[in-house]
Length: 419
Image (cartoon, rainbow, N blue to C red):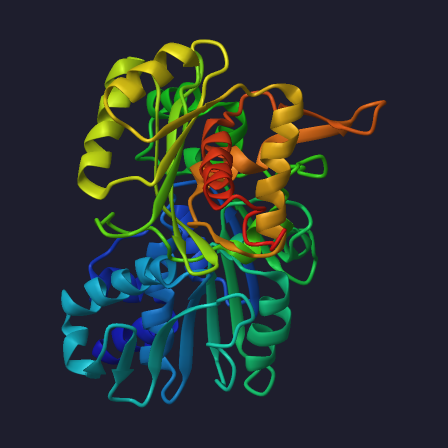
């Protein structure tokens, strides 16, 4: 009887999860865990437990397949660490602690010769090359550059006939995740957040109202978006993802953009740091239904702590009293009316910076969605007319654009372009 139980634990990751890790997966998680396909892709909404599923599969694979290498890869190390930390939690709270030979912050070495490694993909996959891999999990794969997946990750699996899991919320249809999801050669799963029995309809309705229809469809219904008309498409944004958010400290050169928004949208602030010839997005905040005076005072409190070099404010509409209030507080403020012509200059300046990869963006869906939702069409005079997709909010995008513009204004030349 004991032999049968051990065989079941070895052959079935669900039984392994229940008996060894003391975790009882939902039905849809059981189906994924028992899927032995070499290629698996799960397009999922938020909070369906894909990282937990990945951690269980990784541990089971490493324990039952001696002398193998498994990797967790995301666009940034911060994202990779989310799944890796779940792996650590499962191991440290189970009898598997005795199976571990050594642990570091990003690697686990088992006594059977297997190992699990946590890595960022980077822009070119330079941190990945040279490894021979038996199992690769790509967490939030939509944020990883296409060429990294095809030219760095897949070749690692060539000699081992290794497995690859792509787990992600969906984004644009120009990415390899969309192609894999629609391929008959992949085991495909579509997992909206409603599949999790712990998520209530009331919560989902609340989120739909809070974050807007477009972002809700992406993050909770797990639907791909069409960004063919986007002024900031994902192909432009993806190479700029980096672990760049950090605690703001005095003594650095910070520039900020402030879009007061309106009653129906967000008040948004973005703070960037100019470091040598590169911009780093260090902080952002977007809130609804907050008095403008209160938000401006919050910015002033931040300024007292870190000393902003410049603060650019959108003074279109109700913005002029806000600019005057900011000046009264002693903030280093510049106010701008976002006419159609100025919007074109403002957004094109940011686009050029992105094209030159002179700015780092955090892998955050709120900020990315705010950029990606801005659409454009050409006018009869050759200019641009901007709008944003229904059910989206572009306030953070304009705050970021204003922050970059304040760098340009401060330097007296086109930002980092030598003009």
